[in-house]
Image (cartoon, rainbow, N blue to C red; front, side, top):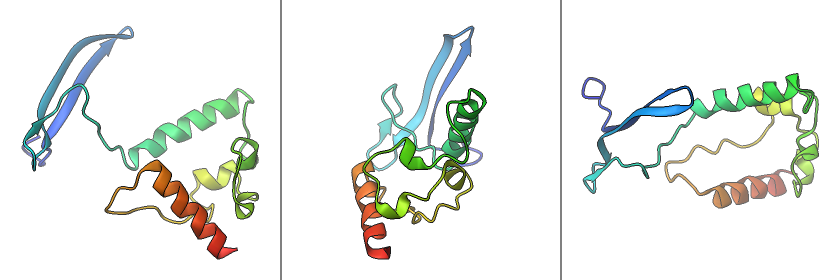
Length: 123
């Protein structure tokens, strides 16, 4: 943590589906001097893309989903402009959805509203 400047971490070792070791290290917030606890939240950022892709391909192997499926098959109340977006577009970042990177870290509801407003404007 010290070597690369990580202020805090939660560590767990799981063996045979059982937690055999856990430890909370460092700070969750340097500004408020708050320690890491079992309730601390960690932002995964782009790391979550790997987990999503693996999950999607497991569903594809199980014939529960296909790369050519439109996302409207699984999500309701989508803007009209999203009807042509397919699973393969989301996985390859070629869907045309706007980039949601912001310093403000919007809530899920605010991010959804922002994306929907973008498509109302773009269509």
